Length: 404
Ligand code: ADP
Ligand code: ASP
Ligand code: MG
Image (cartoon, rainbow, N blue to C red):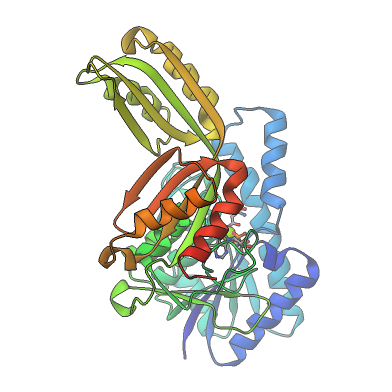
């Protein structure tokens, strides 16, 4: 007998009909002799709607209240799915995060799971019951509802697999698995059979929405193999596993992108130690993530320009912080651009294959796509480009690196 953690995403439970379909999948997996813990997301669109409502009350809606609000989406889907499974003649029960409990830290809206109590659910599934756990939510030590960041049901599933010692963690979604790029912008995307934790973490962090980056990180840390697969087909999908178990034939495994990037350049700052620290300290303290950074120095070595990228939603706040800090940093002017995208190629095969960088830049140049900033790591290269060129860039890179 195997113990399975099965997670169904928002689109998979997006309508009552789809919930019934999921109930049938669960029934089938249970009838194969498995113990089943299901983790479920809110019905698609629900979380966005709730966020909109909170925004219309206040732009600074209290984060701990936001968590109470957002967690309600998963309460609805977990009860509907349990009801649908019961209706098929099986024993099922929903569990909200606080009822298990799934304990998290108190970092509201992006909490980390620290512990999950297992006895009640273990007892239930060992007597033939199917546990349906509301994803995305937990409870802090101060007894407040928390949530795990957007896409956080993936993290719930990995953590459930870990604490319950599941034999398999399966992420059911609306595509065939992890694809070589987002199929919604490139129809030539192909399903990847096996991908390493490291590559998946880069793909997810660089915009491939199919898995939440924190969930991949958690799976990597605890060596939990993850299977990403489709709710709407029987295909086997993608296995996320250690790099040592993969034989690399391709240099590039996938292409990812993220839109909504902004670039800020601070022109004419004095070129002396401590300036970059003075610029970035208040930004970091305000929880704004700095992504790429470029510094260029003038010919006389006295003045420098510092350029960095952030999420578009953080632009206004960042500009205000720089303005407030003007006395300390002492610059000539600030320029910014908020219609930018980051396109990345990812692949562990790059380590052993020089020449990837120039091939990437040449293929973009041939399409007249200007590169505004670059960042690299051992297994990825990212470029910043104008947002309207995203699809064109993704398609050309996908073709250039033999993924079509
Ligand atoms: P769920 O609701 O099941 O959690 P998500 O919407 O969070 O699903 O993630 C699935 C979506 O991720 C797909 O519909 C697809 O458009 C997008 N996506 C982006 N990049 C990739 C990729 N490389 N492989 C698969 N899907 C991707
Ligand atoms: N419902 C949450 C979201 O939309 C969590 C999830 O779907 O994984 O972000
Ligand atoms: Mg998701």
